[in-house]
Length: 186
Image (cartoon, rainbow, N blue to C red; front, side, top):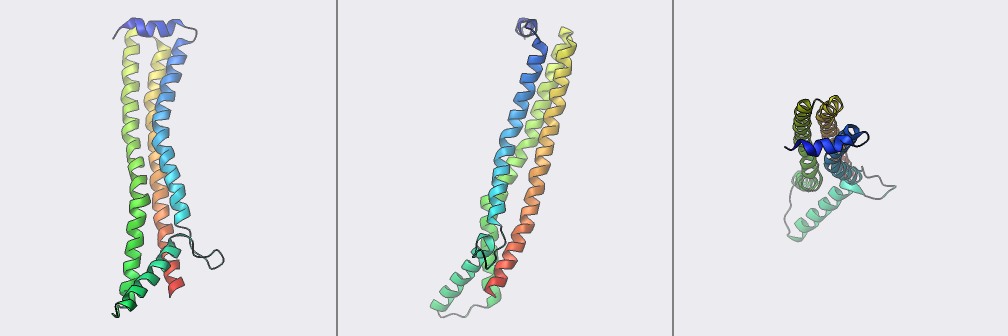
């Protein structure tokens, strides 16, 4: 690399601070994008897994499962076959879980699984900046490179932990909502 690129940046007032700030903001932006999209999906999944209540009508997954049970029963009655009630309930449960996983759980996992590699990329870039700044003997830029390396990893791992824990919580909410829907239809 040409030292004149970094030298030009460092000759400006507070150049090292500008470089450090720009690189740190870039790593935060790289972590923020998948974290925000995963958070929005979690919010939609939270609304979708709302436990139904008679006062609100049958909204959410429980309402969907009650609706599916009625549809399966109606089609079974139309076909003049007597499907066991346990079969109908289990089929409706499986349909709702598959729909939830494809609509919410898998995309949330995709966004959360993007975060650790992004943090690792930020760590490698920060360490490269640190090693290059050692050659230039610039202490401020060295601290900035180290800060970027550590902050990108921390932000990415915290975001990963948040998305995964919310996804686990939403699975519990889904189970409660399905149970409530099955009770509505019982």
